[in-house]
Length: 352
Image (cartoon, rainbow, N blue to C red):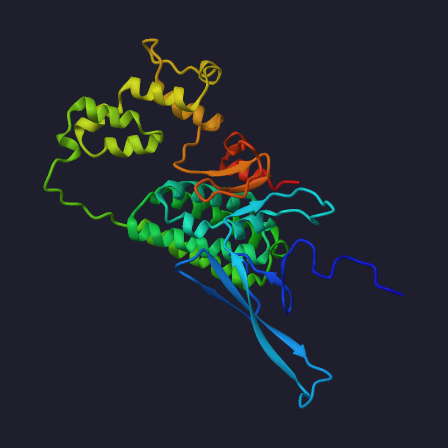
């Protein structure tokens, strides 16, 4: 009786036909088998997967054993992923958060200042609630990228406060999972997680001891700018803590950072009219205290997020990708199908 089952080429995987048979295409971010070799070329955008295929030669003179042939197959380094939420005749299964974390090139994204805050915020949200939903390979990739994030902050002194918050949330989650919740929810040996927790504590200590060197500038400095230009620069900041930290530099900047108009613009940027009208904070003289109202609204409502570059989702192709990398879109007007994806929306895409 013939075997009736799924395709022997394993649905969901990508294969290419060669003269020696079918070869599996291994995409960037996936670990290769021990018998495979991956060679990356610097002058092209493809890779070659060398798979050792064992061919048994029969009915051939002077050949009584098998021989091993190496056959190359072309592998493209795609930086996009098809978001699949159900099984079809063409595709089986669905796309997971861990698969997206492996396929999308976050290791290169953190080297771009436009994407660094986006990736750090995404990793912070994963640390808070989605860490146990990742597979073992995705968790390993998560901590490898996290190590690169910490190393970049230590080298460039760029946005250490955001990474400190990320490590604090991750440390709290791991402490809760390893001690209070139980070890059964974690993938792998618990000693590996305890070692990761110690590594996180070491990273936190390194960031706390981080000293930003004072830069010697022979030309014009920020204090040499006119007051109205300094005020315009402060108005462009969307983070309240950046304004407060900048106001601690000089007495002049402190006066500018306490300006009511500055905090009023910040409230209008992050919150809607209904939100701050319901939570008016007045002084004794009956004037609105915009700075105090900002921190009051921050406790009750989410703030507007702003990033230099984000992931985009094509509604026509259901593909998630970095905009400058592009994707094979089949729509007549691809730009009309694009939708920017926030870090929280990224996680919501994989909640089924």
